[in-house]
Image (cartoon, rainbow over all chains, first blue to last red; front, side, top):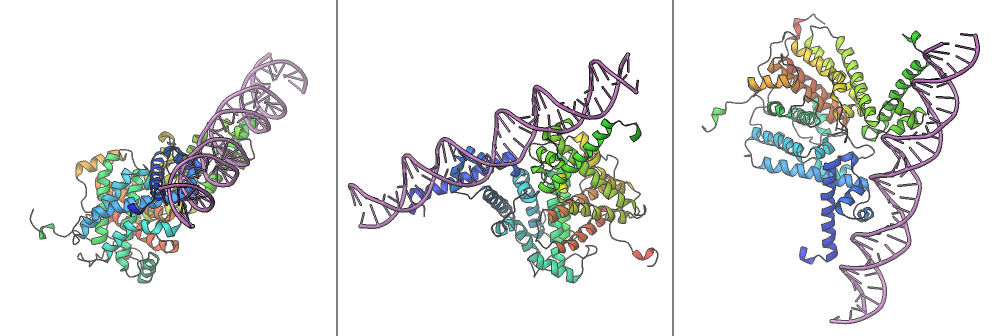
Length: 239
Length: 239
DNA sequence: TGTACATCAGTGAACGCGCGTTCACTGATGTAC
DNA sequence: TGTACATCAGTGAACGCGCGTTCACTGATGTAC
C-alpha cells in the first residue's frame, strides 16, 4: 500500500502521526484541561493554523487523544492478558488488573483523561470513543462469560433481585450475562478504578510505595468477587 | 462578638462569605479547571482587583474551595452518621457510604475537585487541606477502632503479612489500628470512591438510574469487608 | 464633640500573555491532455 | 515527456477574547488628641 501512496498521501500520514505524538507529549506535560492547539503546533514546529488541515478544532484533538489512549491501554492489557492460559480464569483477572494499573501509573495524565474528571465544556462523541473505551471491560466480560469453573460463589450480601439484575445487564450492554456475575464484575471493576484513582490522584497517605500491598489486596478482592474462595492450589501440578 | 465588630470588620466578614459563595457558584458552573478570579469578581459585582484584598491569587481561591468542599462534605456525612445508634456499626458504615454518595451526586464539580483529576499546576497545601480532608475517613477509622462486635472476618484472601500491615498503618496515620481492619477499611473506602467516580464521571453505561442497585452492592461489599458475614437479623427486636 | 491624620476597601485602567480560529497568500504536488 | 491547470499543505498576520496581576487613585472608616 505504501508503494501506491503519492508524496501527498504519505506526508499526510506522517503529519497525522506527528500530530498525535505531539498531542500526547503535550497531554503528558500539562494534562487534558491545559491542552491547546497552539502548544501542539509549537511542539511540531508548525504554524497553529496548519493543524486545522488535520483536525476540526480543539475538541477533535481531545477526541483523538481519548481514542488513542483507550487503544494504548486496551492493547497493553490485551497483550498481557493473552499470555495467560485461557483456562486460568483467576490469572486472567490478575493480569487484567495489574496491567491496568501498570499502564495507569506509567501514563497518569492519560489515565486522568479517561477515568478522571470530565473536561469541562467537552463531551466525548460516544460513537468514536466506545469501541476503544470498552476493550478492557470487554476482557472482563469475556471472563464473566466463561464456563464457571470456579462455582459462582454465593456470598455477595444483598444481591439485587432478579429483575434489577436483568435491567442492569441490559443497561451494561451484556444482556445475556448472568446477573450475579455481572454485579461481581462491575464491583471488581469499580473497586479497581477506585484503587487506581486513589493512588494516582493522591487521596491516601503519600507513601505510594506502600500502596503496592494495598493494591494486591484490591486484586485479591476482585478475584474473590469473581471466583469465590480460592481453591486448594495443590490440585495443580507440584512446584 | 458581632456587637464589638466595627463596620470594617463586619464588612470584611460579609465580603469573605460572598466571595466564597460566588466561588462555589463558579465552580459549579465551570468546574475547577475553568475557575477564574475574574469570573468570581464578576459574579460578585466587584472589580477583579478588589479580590486581591482577600486572597493572594488564584491558587488560594482553589485552596479555599477545596477546604470548603471538604468541610461541607464532612459535615454532611457526620450529621447523618451521628443519627445512627453508636452500637450499630454496620448501620454507621451504610450511613457514611450513602451520605457520601448523596453529597457527591448533589455536588459533582466539588466531588471532582476533591476526588477527581488533580488541577494542573496546582498543589494543595496539605497543612490547610488535611484537617477537613480527613473528616470522612476519620469516621471510618473510628469504626475500625470500635470493639469488634462482629468478629473480624477471616476471609480477605492474600492478606498482606504483618510487617506490611504495620507499615501501611503507619503510612495511613493510624499506627495503632489492627492491620486487617485497616486493609478492610481502605478497600471499602477505595471501592466506594471507585463506585462514585464511575457513576459521576460516566464510565459505565449511561442509564444512571440502574446504578442505584449497583451502588447498593458496593455498600454491601464494604459492609462485608468491614464486618464479615451478616448475622441473623432476627436477634434484634421484631418489626 | 470636633478636628487631623492614618488605615483600609474598592476602582478602573493598564500590562503582557496565550488562546482558538479565520483568511488571503505562496509554493509544491498531482492530473489531463 | 512537456505543458497548463487544479488541488492541496503550510504560512503568517490578524481578529477578538479572557486571563492573572499590578498600581496609582479615591473615598470611607477608624484613631488620637
